[in-house]
Image (cartoon, rainbow, N blue to C red; front, side, top):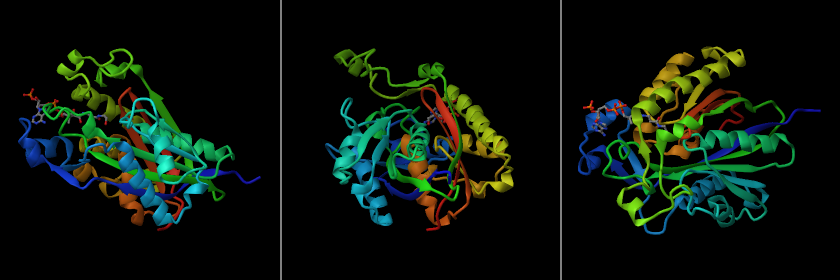
Length: 331
Ligand code: UT7
């Protein structure tokens, strides 16, 4: 019997119109364009403006972009997963609303949360459903409205994050294309260094927690940086050695966009040159769950059937990992 693999067969994206530049941030906190550019690689990020617009707004737009480009009938979708750290609501899942709004009326849907590794973990989940043979079309959307959880008076975090969404469709493949291997890790030690303290079950919201700004992202940047550099490089290298690949076999490194220096360190360890490294951090910043699918949408036209892609991510929790995937189509 032919082995079924899970391939990405279409991608889509959405970023909000509003551009928040380093220059504008200079008006909010004690920072400057030179510091932000040299320490992170970020020049600008997109921000979703407008009352009542949440993560679902961007997820729906990214999904509609994918459906329209690929001429996919939404009623054929079996499952919608929204990878996000900023759901519309704490209980009703964002994915359920997104599925209904895009017309995926025959799908079941749920959210997946692993901070900046949400989309990477989601790729593993989506692929497993396809490989099981039980489902034929799984829509994985990575979307985050980071501006809803950022304190724009905290220079340690407000310069980094942006809003956006990207979508990928997973379908069965009989040519051995698609997901080949994965190595996913986590370590609970991380929650001291990157977290939102209040609003969850440990510390429900009170006037005091709001006054103390505990509903915003807190990050001990230096510590997270160290863990991210070594772990992202380790797992990426493991994908190569475990699959007997050399840097010559790799067409693209697809790294989470948290910091240009982390991306460059990962590329160096894997041995790939900068022209093989997907990068859009300069224009979107860190969009958390959306970085990987936004990269795929931005680079789609350069991707060729059979290309070997190594995905790598690191995020809060801590969560991290790498995936080896063979691209399945020419656009
Ligand atoms: O995606 C999820 C995972 N997250 C990450 O991977 C993020 C990992 N961390 C980072 O990317 C970096 O640690 C940051 C970009 C957050 C910070 O860069 P850094 O090189 O680690 O800077 P630092 O925190 O060590 O700060 C260096 C200096 C400090 O001043 P002193 O103590 O040397 O006088 C900071 O106070 O830079 C100062 N600083 C700033 N200066 C201007 C910190 N933030 C800023 C700022 N503008 N925005």
